[in-house]
Structure formats: structure tokens, C-alpha cells
Image (cartoon, rainbow, N blue to C red; front, side, top):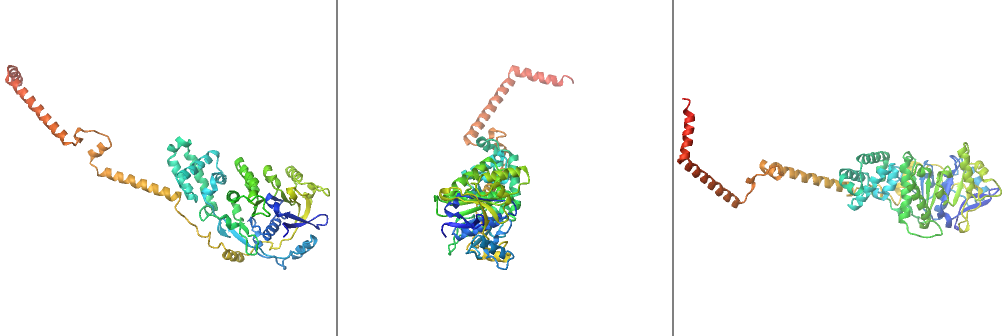
Length: 515
């Protein structure tokens, strides 16, 4: 290795070798072209070259074709002669078949080691993107994350977040004084979105053990970089989940890896296939996040290569940071296609030998326009290049061979068993049980109380007899007795006097007058 990786042959007879300088490989790149023009093979040969140079690679296998990287090509293949002829044309004297160290991953845990993250690590911004939340719903999600931090509630999986949202809804009146109005309907909408993601397999993504970045940056004993292949053929049925996971992984690399400046070669190369899914209907905040990561992550030694059909799929601010480019053929059937093709041609440094716009239409399968960064990071002159043939198997690996590699991997058994430790769901459940038991105890005590005592304790009635001090009882009894005696003496005195006799006679006369 001389600090470069071989891409193919350029020039009039394809004899001028085209290289990508490893020192500038972390300046990011773009692989674009219409369907069927050879983008996947280009991705495959770049992964091979980076691995051979000792650079780990992470890529997603959208069509199921890239698993063949683990096996050498076959001389009995129907493409063997075509590959051999191409190698001679471009002067690839050392061309030979070879397999590469591959580790298989799968969010669904079916075609590779399970790969997980936690809800907390995903964060509210990416989670809101995944759930397609409105601004108001995203605000409630941010409140939930803030409360989880304040109360020490670990958000590991979906049921943790679902339980926390229920708690937020139950306490929304108290929380409104601090955070503003919290709508029950908005919480319900978030819960429904979580249910959809759960049905799409999202519950497999969230949980522990979470992926450790060191496990995708492995270099084997022979010095070859590990090629990490994410099975995405089934995952593509949930494109939002696919794009959000890759963006999370990119963000984690940005957050966790140390600064390395400009290394002689990247610490990791990350291929983002079907990149348009990341930007389709993406809010401005998310696009800004991607732009920030793309701008700064190169200082962490990570090169990011977007793979898409048209350069127009990538926002201009991000496209301007992609220095290494491989442009396969573009079709121009509509006015919009012609405009996109013209804009794509304008981004290349012109070659006086041909018209770039015309060349983009004319290049055949396996051929592309290439422009790689040169000395001091200056873009190279665009060149028509015949891409070198792959050394590994073209097409998918047999399932039995894949399973054998998964079982023999140095990571076998590390991520397969799901761990469910105490987190927000369990804590909130314990709180609810404790509150229910406390309420039941109070209710039971009230049932045991006498009616009068219960009414007194609930302040429904006040009775003087409730005063239980002995001095109060004795004073009241003596006062009552004295009052009765005084009244009796006064009545007897009046009755025995003149006035009393008159009253008696009047009463008796009235009683017997009618007789």
C-alpha cells in the first residue's frame, strides 16, 4: 500500500490508473447513478479496498447483494471472463479473487447479530423524526425526556417511554404550571406512533445490550479492516426506521470518538445507501444536524459516503462537503431530470477531452465519472473511469455460510440475549403499586371507624361530646346539675305564692268549666 486505494482505469484507453488517496478519504464522498448502472459494485470494490488498507467499513445491504464480500469470487462464474478482460484493460496486474472479514448485523436479529440502542441515546430529535411528530407533539416528547433526567428514570426501551408518557398525562395539570399545556390528545397520538414503530420491528432496536462502537471498528490479525454489513433488505419496508438508525449511528460516532485531526487513513468509513431517505421531508433542524455532523466528523477520522440515485437528493450544503465522487450514468427523461443532470455536471472540475454533461449520459454499466481529492484537498479533474472488477463474490452469500460466519464471529453471544434491567417502566409501576396500596390502607382504616368518628374525621359534623378531656366532662355535669336545681326552686316558690295560686285556679277552672 502506498497510501492510496485503486478504483479503476481512466483516460482514452482506460490505462490511466485512478486512485483515492487515503489521507483525504475522510473528506467524505458521493456514489450516485441511476438504477442498474453499477453503484452497488462500486460500493463493493471500495469496501474491499478500504478493508485491505486496514480501514474498518460500515455499510447497509439494501438489496441483499453485498453479503458476498465474505467469500472470494469464483473462476467458474459466468462473469469471470468479463472481469479478467476488464482487469487487463485497466492494468490491474495483481487482480485475484479473495474474501474479506465480514461481521453481519441486523436490527431485527434475523440475519446477523442484533444491533440495539436505548431510547435515551436516540434522543428526542431523532425519535420525533422517526415517529413523524408535529411540533406540539415533539414538545411533549422533550418534556418527557427532561422529566426522565430530573427523576432518574432510565429510558431503555419502548415500554419505558410509553409508561412515562402515561405518567405525564396523569400529572399534566401540575406539569402545566411549569411546561405549559400538555394535551391528552397529543400524548395519545405519540402513543399510537410508538405502537406503529413497535409493529414494524422497532421494539427490537431499543433495549440493551446497546451497540458498542468499538465492535464496528475491529481490525483482524492480518491487518484488514472489518466490513460491517447491516441487513437492510427487510428493514427497507420501514424506511424511516432505517434512515433514523443510520443517522443515530453517525451521531454516536461523532459524539463518542476522540479528535484525531487529519490521520493518514480513516478510522472508519461509513456508507449511507439510499441516502435520499434521510432527507425526504426532513425538518430543517434535522438537516442542520446532518450538515453539522458531516462537517465536523472528519476530524474524528470518519469518512461518510452517501449512495443515492441523483446528486440532487442531497441538500446543497452537504453536497458541497463531498470531495470524492463517483458518478454513474444518469437518465434525463424529463425537464427536471435534465436540469438535475446539468447541475451534477457543473459540480465537477472540467476535463477538456469531453463534455461532462454528455459523458454522464453516455457512460456504460461498470463505467463512471470519477473525481477524487488531490494534494492539499483540491478536487481532481473529472475522468471517465472503468471501475475495477470485484475480488469477492458478486451476489448474495448462501444462508448456511452466513450462519456459519455469524456463529464463528468474535462477537457471537454478546448481543443475542436481550437484557431488561430496572428502568422507567419498573420504577413507575412500583410507584403506582405503592400509591394503590397506600390508598387501600387508608380506605380500610376508614371502614373500621365508627360512623360518628368517621364523620368527625372528615369534618362533616362537629359535636361537643367529641371533647374527650375529663375536666371538661366534670365541669359540664356540675354546671348542668346546678342549673336544674335553681330552676326547680324558682318554680316551686312561684307556685306557693299568690300569683302561683291564681295560675293554678285558672288552669283548673279552664279544664272543668265545660262540665
